[in-house]
Image 1 (cartoon, rainbow, N blue to C red):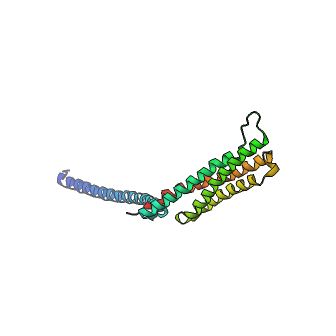
Image 2: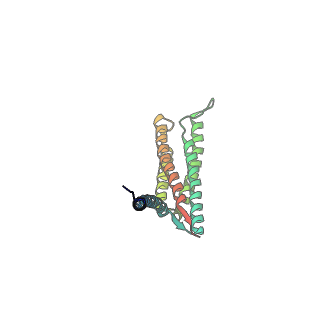
Image 3: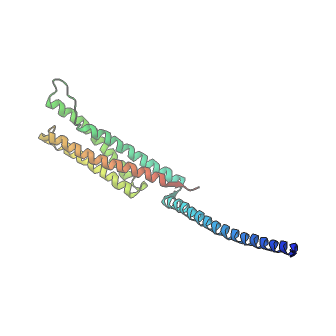
Length: 204
């Protein structure tokens, strides 16, 4: 039986062409599916990144250069006054005090009176500065400034009116409590000021 090789090779060629065509179609479909998946993942990641940027932008406060410098200067001055109160308040009735040989009660009261005068001066400076610059910083910062001021005022009035209770253990205990309340508000205020300044963006 004679084999018609021409017909055989023609059939083989047709089969190969069909397989190649089918493979091409399958490859194109697979690549399209893979491309669509990659594009979807990339789009999702980009949306997440953009959402993060948008979140940060939403927190930013656009201000003029003059506004920024004015507000920054006000916060700087007020915080300097507050820091002076913190340092002076801590030395008003320290838990660990030093005495010298022959020191009398009158000597201790005289030293306390000098510290109290100094504390009264820095407290009044804080009060005056806080009120004068109040329009130039946010309400939440002012509220925590008030918390610091109240703790300092309580310390001032307690020491001034302690009378015979001065230098007793309960007197020192009151001082520690006032200082703890002051420092809690002071630390909170410090964080607020840092956060607020970081959110200010100068419009160009």
